[in-house]
Length: 364
Image 1 (cartoon, rainbow, N blue to C red):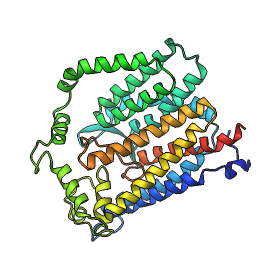
Image 2 (cartoon, helix red, strand yellow):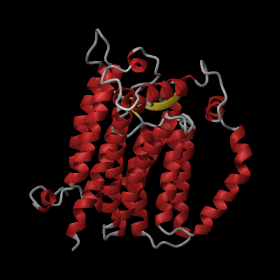
Image 3 (tube, rainbow, N blue to C red):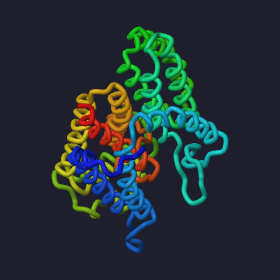
Image 4 (tube, helix red, strand yellow):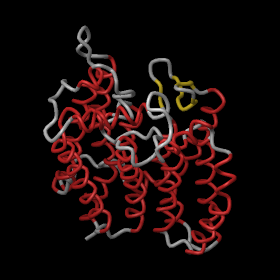
């Protein structure tokens, strides 16, 4: 049930995190506009879709702020199997884009099922561990689900998202006090299997690792990273000004509206502009982490950690790859990167975290 009249929801609403989220989303919308506008087309269809995604996302945020968390976790548990079915369908009959089958076409729009895993995985695990006694046997089921999700997303192929899901799931399992021997043994076998895993990487994935190590032609393999670094460096301390970035405006920077939107920010707003955005992200993450650790219910903490982990990991990974400190893996920057699916999933996740912030005061 969704409480409608209870004034406590407004009284304990987390206005601090909400203000940070809206600020970041609006800045992200500004840079999608900057990255996609042309002289003859001021409002591109990319910007219009992102505008719709942002403001409908705020509505989604508010809806998920008021759901009963136990009911949500139950829906997430059963919904997870539906998402696994969508992942299977994506591999078989998904819409191909940039050489990968990651999307399902609904004719009027496309959506990415792998993004939905970030939302339903924590809900599924939280429901399971809240209903089961945490014995050694009880960990088998979630480990199998996590492994299956990782494999299905990897087969699309989408190594970046698969790793985000894997590490987020492992963080949830760590919080549930799974025997630490599981992590030690898993790490040991991963180390032994490293040569086999490397051999099974696709050529372009190996190439990205080589680029990280400094190899590759600057006009071919290294082009994306080199142009990103040029954009970031040319912004200087204060930037060239909004809509005045030459790397962006002259189309030297590839994937400016998606993977490399942070580079557009750095070029146009400079070091201090980028620092301001990083501080907004940092304050948001610190605030949400505080909310999670002060929640008195284990169910709420488990959901919160599981939802916050992929947002933090995606932010670190995206910024790391555009600055050349991590391989390019196509991970979106939350609330910034163009794409309605991940935008909606991010707002839904943040809405549930606001739900947890509100419910903290209901238990006293």
